[in-house]
Image 1 (cartoon, rainbow, N blue to C red):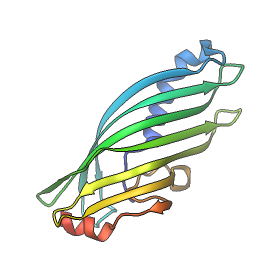
Image 2 (image 1 turned 90 degrees about the horizontal axis):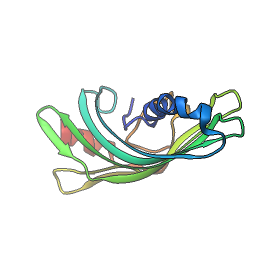
Image 3 (image 1 turned 90 degrees about the vertical axis):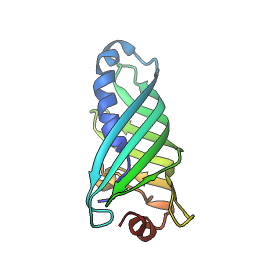
Image 4 (image 1 turned 45 degrees about the horizontal axis):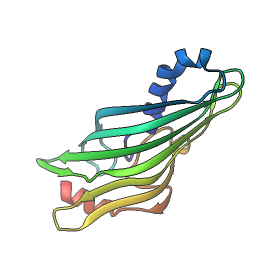
Length: 164
């Protein structure tokens, strides 16, 4: 499966982080900043293992209903990824994206998507692998990606060739 920093994992961590303030939040939004440093191994993108180191920072706003239940979050993030495989390392450029998460009255996720940059990665031949658009995490069982559901998709074959 394609990989990108999992907004779903970040949102799940945020759910835990905001679970205590939710009880006393009323309907006042909570604003916060956060950062994460993650390493994952993707075996589905190119047919061989790729280690992806992601560094992301962002601003987070959680919105609550009158009862104090978390109903929506909005993120504005900047991420930079490094891809390593077969003795080759490719360092990406920072890219920006927005994330939206919404929950129903029972606290079930109803919407979780990102839009904006999905990847910016200079390739050794001088070309650029870049993807931008919208990606729906719920439609993909929370899996990440380097290509969007809609928008501009980078050349995955060229990325894989650069890492082979």
